[in-house]
Amino acid sequence: MITTPGLTTPDADDEADPGPDAGAAGRVQAVRHHYAHRGDRATVRGRAYTVYLIALFALIYLVPVLYTASTSPALLAVRTLTAAAPLTCALALAGCWGAQLTGRFWGPLVLQPFLLHVFMSTDMSPMSYLGTIARRRLAAAGTAVLLAATTAAYLTTDLFDRPGTALPGLAVAAGMSALAAVAWLWGQVRAVRDNLLLASAAGGVAVLVSALSLAVPDGEGGLWLVAAVLAAGAAVLGRAALRSIRTIDLARLARESARASQAQTYAWTGTLHHALDLYRPEPRGLTSALIRPDGRLRGHLAQGAVRALRTRGRALAAVLLLLTGGAVLTRGVAGPDGGLSLSLWLAGAIGVYLGSGWVSETWRGLRDELTLAPLLGEWWGGTLARALAWPLTAVTVGTGLGGALALLLPWPLTGRPAAHAVLLAAGSVVLVLGARFLREMKLNLPLELLLPVVTPLGDLSGLRVVAWQFDGFVAVLIGVAVLNAVPSAPGAGVLAVLIAAGCVWAGLQRTGWAHRGLLYRLRRV
Image 1 (spheres, rainbow, N blue to C red):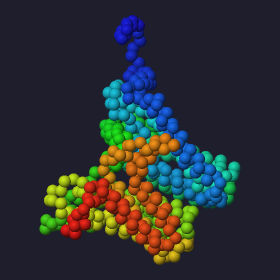
Image 2: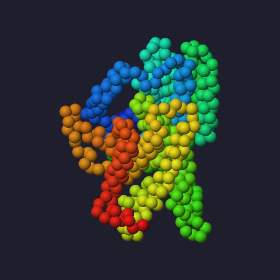
Image 3: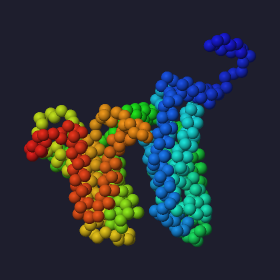
Image 4: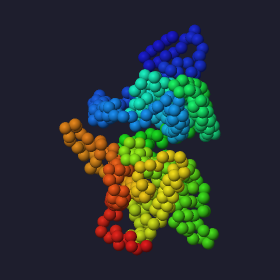
């Protein structure tokens, strides 16, 4: 071999080229090494600040929570291993489905567009540069899920209080994390039909394992059976998912990577709602259904229903969330004060909050009409009625049906009187709608939020930015906690209306319409 600086010339005695994939690992490592040492890489000061924020969070929030959980009674008491097996099957099934759905939008093979373009422009196969990345990210995702599952089980149950239940519980958490990680990859590399097949198979296996675990005598392998099935399923599914990388659609992966890069840019610059807008489904069909045969537009409710049905997947998710949230919310407000009832109340309110946003795109239309220049003058009295008729009706009806479903189920609804429970449920729905209005009227990040907030613990301006990003969730959580603290149900209902009115006024302030003359405009329909 004859070599010169920057030039390599093969002799006639050199061996033939072994193939395009020869030394692929070294070439991939070299590309990633050069990209990692570009000019905008992270600095030592930036890493130190990240470590400081993590330590501050652990000191202020994590340590007190862990200490409180270790010194207080468990929220959910695990009586027998056999009784806990069906619950773990349900959690594992939810983790598998959630990982599949996440993989359809943001999978483990999403790269920086520049890196992916460089790799796609070479003669290497997709497995050469995507296989190692997939294994590394699956390992990281599995570790994160394992830590989150064990921490949640430690905080909410007494599973780790006894040696006889700690070891099988840890085995189930490990199997659940492995299954969720490989399902994340499966959701990205396989087609929709294969994902539906896996979801159906996972549901059937969960029901079968739950039935078998209930047949096992108490203390003799209920959770061990669940752990073994999870481990076997993760091994089989992971092998098939990694093999599917060879046939991945690189064009679709490039589009996903470009969208993910743009979403990251939006999130890093403070406009998280713009990042989420990139993942909204595109409306399809039913364009002519908005107009009657005589040429006039349909009513407000009919227009909202048609616009919701143009994104069928989003509408189906909204229906499920509203029904489930309404049922859980009813169970929470009808139970005794504190404990599990408060947790169910919060979970139900969050479910209704998510469903209220997914039920229709008219929230975005209202925000655009209030912020953009009016085409027909400033007399916009019918805007609120036209935009909010459908979401208010759909959320109220969906939550009410979910509450009625909760009454039909054999749950012990003892605690508050029925009239007080209905009043608290209605107040919670009003509170959720006010929080949703506040969130949807959000514009760009206000500049004053970036000003430093100097405290003895350091600069806490980042907490203000986080609160602004998730202001809807913050309003729901704080509002439900305040309603639960009020001893009188009528007083809690009035307080919920006042909080919702404050959220609506704050949302109108964001759009610039909360000024003198607003009420006069509202009167002109």
